[in-house]
Length: 186
Length: 165
Image (cartoon, rainbow over all chains, first blue to last red; front, side, top):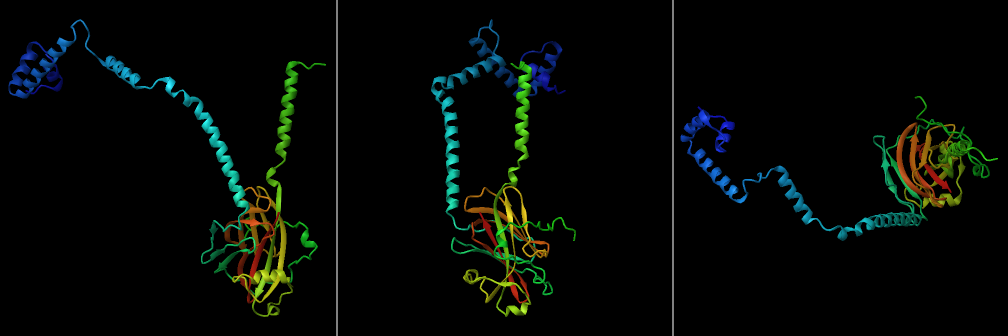
C-alpha cells in the first residue's frame, strides 16, 4: 500500500506515531531513498538545534522579510546624496520647455525664408489620374501636372456664361457663395 | 453703500460669466487671414479662335511666366474665368472660378498658422463634381501655384491659385 504525500511528509518530519508510523516504516523498507531522505532531515534539524537554542522559536516568514528589508535599507543610498534631484528636475523641465519653444520659433523663421515648399502630400482619389509636383521658388511658380484627367467635353461652353471681371472689379472681394458639390445631389 | 458679502460675489460671478459669454461669441476661426484668387486659363498651340471662346487674352507678363515653364508652355493663352475668395483661419472655403459652371472648383483651408508673406493650405481640386486632387502647399504672397488641368477644345485648362496676404 502506497501512502499519500501528506503522510510521507509527516513521516519525514518524525510527526507520525502509532499504527501510521509502523505502516509507513514498513513501506519505507522497500524504498531506501526515503530512508536516506529522513536521515538527512534528522541530521539537518540536529544542526539547526545546535545553532538556535530550543527556547527560541524557529525562523518563519516575518523573520525572513525583516532580514530582507534590512538588506535593502543597507544598500539604499542616503537621502543627503540624492537631495539635489528634488530641485534639479523642475529646473530641467523648465529648461526643456524653453528649449522646445526656442526650437519652434527657429523653425518658423526657417520656413519664412523657404521657397515654395514641395507638396508633402498628394492624394489622387480618381483612378487613372496621376500628379507630378514641380517645385517652385520665389522666382519660379510651383506647378502640379495632372495626367489622365477626363477631358471636358467640347460641348461645354464657358464663354457664353462665364464672367470675366474687369481689372477694377477683380480687386473686390467676391460676394457669391460657390456651390459645394459635397452637398449637391447628383 | 457697501454691498453685502453674498451680493458682491454674485455680482462678480455674473460679470465673469458675461465676459466669458461675450468672448465666446467671437469666433476666431472666422478671422480673415487673407484672400485667394483662382484663375482659369485656356492654353493652346492651335488657333484660339477655333475654340470658339470669347475669353480675354492674357497680359504679356503672365504669358511670359507661363511660357517659362516647360509644362505650361503653349502658344496662346486666354483667361476663362477668375474668382477671389476669403481665407478663414479655421474654416474651409470654396472657389468657383467659372461660375455659374461648377466644372472646376477649388476647396482650400489653412492647416497651420500663416506668416506675413505665406500661408499653408490644404487644397482640393474638383473637376466635374469629382475630387481629383488633394494636396498641401505653402504659398507665398502673390506667387501663384499652377495646376495643369484637363483638356478642352484642343487645348488645356491651367488653374492658377494665388494668395493675397
